[in-house]
Amino acid sequence: MTTGDRLCNIDECKEPNKCYGKCRNKEGGFDCTCPFGTRGNAYTGPCDGGLAIGICASLLVTLTILLGIEWFRYKQRIIRKDLMRQREEHMRQREEYFHLRGGQLLRNMMSRDNNIPFMLYDRDQIESATNGFDNMLVIGQGGQGTVYRGCINLHPDNPVAIKKCKGFDEDSWAEFTDELLILSRVNHENIVKLLGCCLQFDVPILVYEFVQNKTLYNLIHIQNDPSIRTLEIRLKVAAESAEALAYLHSSVDHPIILHGDVKSTNILLNKNFIAKVSDFGCSKIRTADENYDVVKGTMGYLDPEYLRNFQLTDKSDVYSFGVVLLELLTRRMPLSVDKVSLASIFQEAMREGHFLELIDAEILHEDNMGLISDLATLANRCLIMTSESRPTMSTVADELRRRMAGQVQQDQGVLTGTSSSLALTASSGANTSEYLTGERSTDYYDLERVASMNIEFAR
View 1 (cartoon, rainbow, N blue to C red):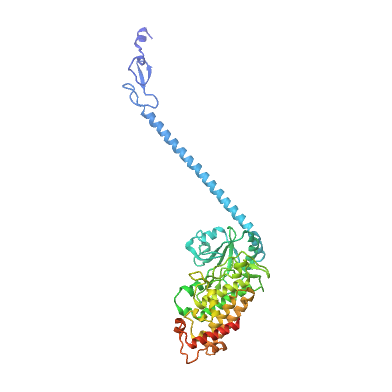
View 2 (cartoon, rainbow, N blue to C red):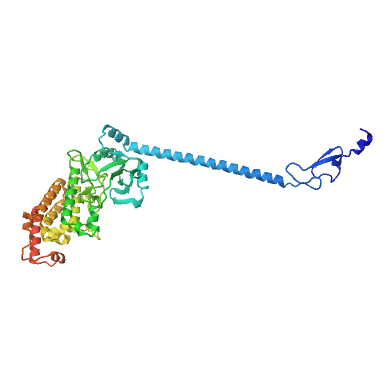
């Protein structure tokens, strides 16, 4: 290279305002470019830094999104772990309930006896069937628990009655699970069948067959058709209910089973008016000479002796059934608006000899007087204050069956001794209105006096 060439090779990068970016000198000229992250024409003016800001912003947004996704996944993992822990805790609690309630022992006993028609239901099945014990599905409530209508495994054509017991003593679980097998063997046409139970709650859950029709309470106090509330139907329901209770009290093929909450709402009626006693699963089973003090009942039906000493006996059920008989005869509530018991009102009327004033006008007819007197006498015996003086349920059932047979004979034109002794004379001309208005003719007075004499004699 000559001296002239070296003199002509000028470094333009050192000259001011030649390059506003990154300058690189070369022979015969120079290159001028914008630095990384900027844009523009570095020969004519400064480079713009907006591209760097955009890239940084994009990177920041992308990083934020990635962090958000990762945080969401982290929270999801935490929630899943919590749900798994809760599920495991629920399962552990269910198993704990099941074992503490004697479920495994019950399962082993069922496996040894394949003839037991009894099911152990899972908690999920019960909660699903009752929609979490929805109040809209409640079909009954009482001193022993709440009954829900439900469908196990969501079969709408096969509803069941699911009872959630209350007021249950924790110390009673061991004996209760033993009793369940006995209750599962109860087989009587006038008793609602116990299908199974669930032992995964803090209280017993019992599953019964569902009776499609309504209760005796509905027949007596709510519906307004007297044609399905005749004395014959009332007597039939009373006799069938008494036979069911007598079966529970019998100790031929099972220990004595005490119902503990006999009342008209616990007597169900199917479409043929066949009575079925229900709500006995939270009851107590006892051997002879044993009493238990944990069963609750319903005011108006409770045995006065039970209220005094809290000892439930078979005669406690007899007293409660006597109140049901009064409901059938009078169509009055067990407790008045002023909380006066129907039993005390009836017993006072019996003592004073004017019990007929309490009898329902629908059945207060001349042809019924003998039967009404007999039923009133029987009810009064069931309501005797001293339990030892009350009849057994077997005796009550036998007497009601005899009255049914006598009623059939009377319907066929055969007069029984009781009905003839209470028949009105032909000259009386008494009718039902006289019984209701209280206009006491001589014949009406004689009728009450004879009936009262018969009742006093029966005592």
